[in-house]
Amino acid sequence: MSTTTDNRCWVGFDLGGTKMQCSLFDDALRPLGHRRRRTKSELGVDGCTERIVQTIRQTLEQHQPAGTTLGGIGIGCPGPVDWQRGRVHVAVNLGWNDVPIAKILEDAFDCPVTVLNDVDAGVYGEYVGGAGKGARTILGIFPGTGIGGGCVYDGQILRGKSLTCMEIGHVKICDSPRPGATGMTGTLENEASRLAIAGELVKLAYRGEAPHLRELVGTELGAIRSKTIAEAIAHGDQQVEAAVTRACTIIGYAVANMVLLMCPDRVILGGGLVEAMPERFVKQVSKIARQHVFECYRDEFKVVAASLGDDAAVVGAAAWARQQLGSAVDQR
Image 1: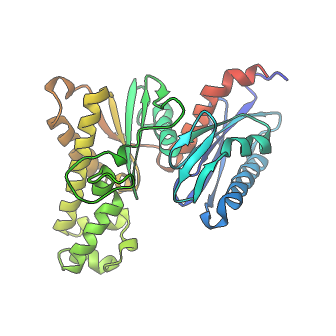
Image 2: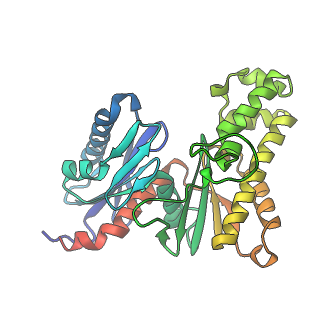
Image 3: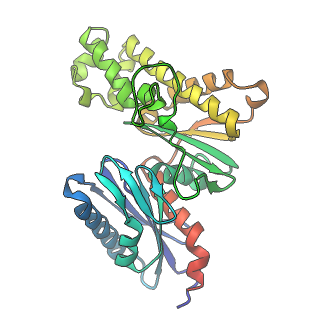
């Protein structure tokens, strides 16, 4: 069955974080509608995947224009992804191991599916319609509970032969003895993620060195969110500010390393921490990165904050599906 390029729509789905988001776009990537729901990882693999199918189906029922054809689905999933086979190797926060999410969605909707790492999807979203628009090559670093990374190199998401890559949060960045998820010590994620910062702030609050933070949330690790950290700094907690500056400095070293490796023309910082303190992160990361690259590289890249927020991954997932599947759909 043939179709034309003006009556297709595309689903972008983001499975990262505690909430899933499904958005529907027309063929020009104009948003048609969206739906957000709690992920509910406690449902197990079958329950979670059924919830994904239900969410997509409800979004299509509510927002798909009459006479349009579903061109394809792009889904961003946490953790390492086998993009060739459409499988999620492992997603710790979901309890997933080797889940064939592409086949599940293809069977449910009778359309092609592309599977991305969720940070790759977010970085690609910024590339096509956000802070990376117009750049040749962008590097994305997203500090949150962990630290995710992605790269769009000359229009293509940087990937391995079959697996996603750019796990920048798990590269060694300093001599700290704290082990990370791979067993390597001193990783970027262990030293500069929100969780790492919060661990330091709990000690500061307990010792009375962060009085405003202690007043806001006490010494409970789980209560220290990105906005809480920003509020404590605004209220004058100097040691909290120093801890955040240290994290920005470490991320700056990571950016310098990546500039020396691939010379991206734009570096995009995103995630909850950056959204809460964009100027602080951009300024300090840019300063440190420029100090630690050869002089000839210093004016070749610009550090900016992400601009699409929670929509970045759904935009990127849908755009990647359209880019990868569009010509194939035309020939069906």
